[in-house]
Image 1 (cartoon, rainbow, N blue to C red):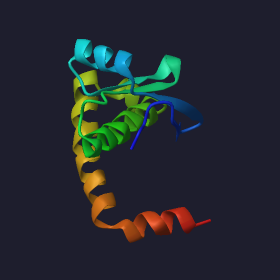
Image 2: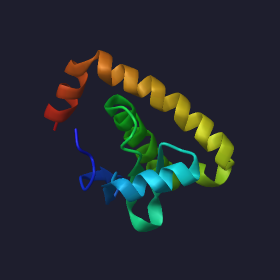
Image 3: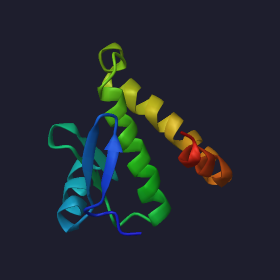
Length: 110
């Protein structure tokens, strides 16, 4: 799945997914497979990662965006935030992958 240029709704914002060659360089420089660029309303994804990893990274970075817009942002250090989001990301990805009926139900709910 090509992610570059797609848009994702994160809280009250629509953010652009950045996963082109420049994003690869930025990810490599940061030593990460993705980044939340809140001031730019962009999520950086390293497209060299396997597609399932890219999607997990996208969820992870979206969670950073949600976190940033809450009081939690002031209560925890950046290191604590990363540990919490990484833990939740892995569990949430597994729940969503193992229960596609749940995703369908969420999309159908009004």
